[in-house]
Length: 411
Image (cartoon, rainbow, N blue to C red; front, top):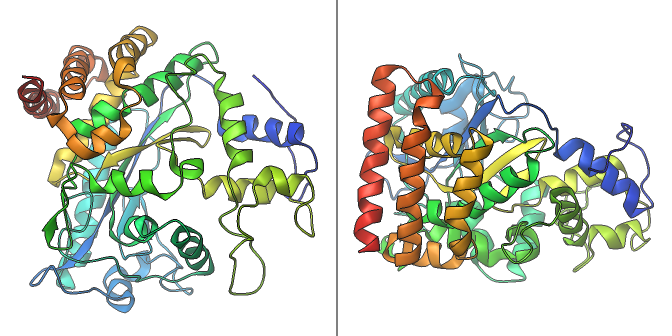
């Protein structure tokens, strides 16, 4: 793996090799796979009329001291009681991001408490959390405006409406897993990508948007995949299965067009088509810094994004407590090297079927068969998570329900 000495945030970058070393250091922090975290997004609705728009001020008042500074620049942005931070996405979606924890059971218990706290704040304001991966009642509509979000909208609009749908209407579940030891990295990286399409199919919840059926199992994933493959497509490919993860990610980052060009003014829209590699080679008036590279990475949204850990971004928001099921499945599948390799072997034949997973879900027989086999493997590995008996039984029942649905799709 490429390594580099730590660079100051203001260090000027002029060569791709220096940028590559920085990316290896900040994006792939290897070590024992111990910690797990989650980030949960929900659309937010008026409890009496879910189709009614919810404006920025109503969200700010509901969240109070937990409001992010994008809603209130004087807010303390206080964490929730169990340490989760609260952010609000461009369409008013609320996101709860947990601290990583070494115990999946402790993560679930703490996150449930923080979800309950957010739910109570919203309930007192006559609001409620959504339960699907895309807004089933309302069309896309901006709620939070910042220079970053305006630049995103401008760039995405060049390719069509999918960017606005993603920004203003979608809600996802992100599972954050350790990179693992250096010797395990390639298998974990490949496995977490390969299982993506069958798990998208197994946990799709986004088939209805803006009051009508979409004809997609996951219209949320469809929106992401339609934005720009240089920014939202997968980094790992079954057609390059053994490519070094750091090299693949470096190539992806440098080839991606800029989404935002930060400065003191309100318009951060970059010149069309300028990639970070172009910037390194002098395409803009000033050279980039390591801080610019870090920010550029934050504007890339592949299904799996390395951020020191592996941020799994391909799952739809789940109803109620069902968010714990894909968390348990992914954690179990990546629990050890042998299970990760087995998961990769099961999923590799369908690892390129991202669009089919979004379109058909478990109605696609190859995806359904792979999903059923992966869920069986997760059930076998589930005891390794050391969940309390009641939590283990509840999780097993939930996974078995999804496994039954996958088996029906396979038939």
